[in-house]
Image (cartoon, rainbow, N blue to C red):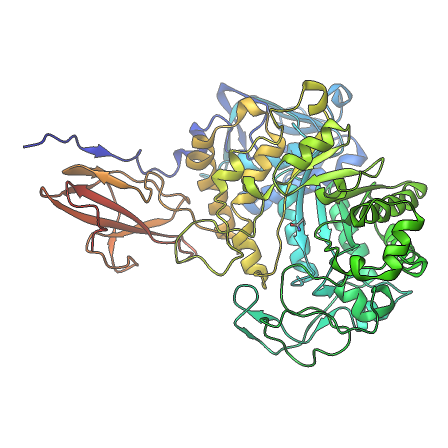
Length: 633
Ligand code: ACM
């Protein structure tokens, strides 16, 4: 008889130990350094909250409100310490010596000192809110420690496409809140698309009366199997935009608007057909794509993908774009304005006598030269207004605009080429797990998505600094961003499902120093805590599969399977009889012991169900004792 060793899959199930044992004290993104000491600071209702500087009052209030909700008591806020009272002290003294956005936290038995300034202090308080343990017997016992922290990258971004689907102002604020909690500092707001123009521009009202409305949306993956035949419309008023920009700014987040050009302009062209090379031609629509209403005239697109009707480079178009940007500049104080530049098909420019003549008159090489001309002209306009442009990596084609920052999305090559040309770069490659519209697992339980495979571990494993660059060139990589394209994301709940926990991984690659990254610690110690918080706050997320299980085939005769819940407080249910697990299946309470006779195999199927009732996909592991390779039935 063959001797086969028992297989132990993973570590013990445990709940309360997560944060206490964690080298990062439960903080995501992991700080630069955490030194733990013996002893602890007891936080109770007699503790004072000391904050001497008026400009720190908002941050002090934020912390106090958090303590009130966690501990059930608010602290007395004072300007200076008082004898016989332990205190949390918030200060900017000495903060000038800290790195940009950096902070320090020092927790001893007698004093809880938080040092930082502006964004640094705000981030210090975010870390404090994450590290505070649960209240026990009316007090919160915080282990003594010294934390020193600052970011790896200055640009840490999340993108949201509101062109394909629109999200309520309240949701955009929640998105911004979540970004701030995880020390992300740039919100890239993708506002204009083929399927809808989403920002009020007073000089061009038809952008929103016509351009923000499509007659239907396709059902299913591109090009769609049917149309829902429902008008889909909406836009953000300038007042709403101002509200969101101010909301973000109060959380140290810059909002970067994206106004797409010269492609992805069908909605603007539907409103103002003269922006097209062929104003009198019908909008080209895919004959395979289902369609609601008339296909005649200029139309806002109803299916996804890339569309041919792009902006014509007339003086009228440039005047239109400059007018639009003038209003955008008033609303958004950001240094950067994103002007798109991606996926601009050249078919119409090739066919247009005006464009061909334009190429000749301006000594341009070809249509790529025209694309480059277009971007450079807009860059010049925006530089003249004191702003800088960001463009997707297609802006490399035909020559980069002199001061442009490049977002590398089609892999990392565009970023490498741009850094080699001494242009700033933001890495956001879809190939490396930063397209959060991609699927998080290969399970058939996943909802409709564009495709791809981008579990959070893929984003976590990505290093935004390409090894191909010299040390000098690496300095041009100013940061990293993840994108949420919303063709297949029609609700806030689904947006949250796609974003979490991947945004936590993004935060860690954007903020945490490379030598502090630790996937095992992230997945097994910190994610379970952070996901449990989402569970409590009515926030949707992708529930990871049990820690210690994967969908591989395990060989052996005796199995001793130890699993750990991926969300604190969740349960794992399992079957060994090939049925789909649910609450009525066996509850995992300790190692699953299985003996598989020689020549046989069976499937362990698990599901994680969280306290709020959220469910993971079903994970299946084949336990095989020399059975043939065909899947176990
Ligand atoms: C992009 O994903 N088209 C930038």
